[in-house]
Length: 248
Image 1 (tube, rainbow, N blue to C red):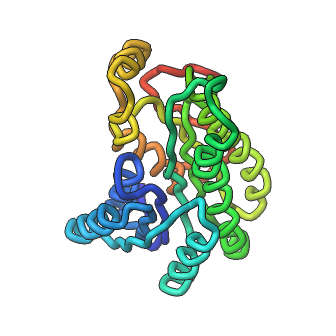
Image 2: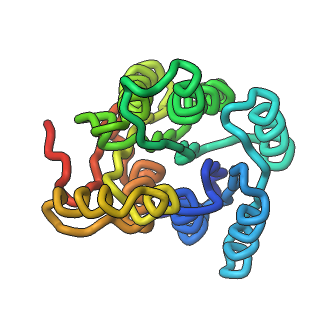
């Protein structure tokens, strides 16, 4: 797999799956722009990639903020002139039974997990259409495919991201812009680390492979959709979950 001469963006790139994806893109020749709210870890991640011989730049990014997205895009276009690959990895969730939630508590999960990726696509896809090339990989969740206890809002937002991916893929196909979706299962990330131990134990028991995924395993799947090995794939949803979800 090769991303030589490709300009790429990874959101949520300061840690977890986003960081592993940024490293994977750089390792195969991609120029990587890392976006994240965590500036200290983001700068360190970019520095580590450069130390390993890659090309990486960190730009602070809040995908729920329109002005931040505009500034992020402006810097990339100013420096590199275009974007070839967009990996929407940033996400956030928490466990709360829906009946105990309030409408005000839904906004953050919807803004980050659904509207954020939509806004990033809206910012960059016109340029991809114009250049007749683009690869967009949205990172959803198996929760969006089959639901997840005490994660109704999160699952709803992630399910919306899956539907958005398929619809946008239909718009992009005629312009040689492929849009695909990865659905990780439980993965060793800071988000999982914040989950209660009893819930982690139950999740691991439900996974046929009896272990959590590693960020690098998810990044490899994202890389496949980002490069030319997947040139005839668009509108697809791939679960990387150790067999937790087996759906057509």
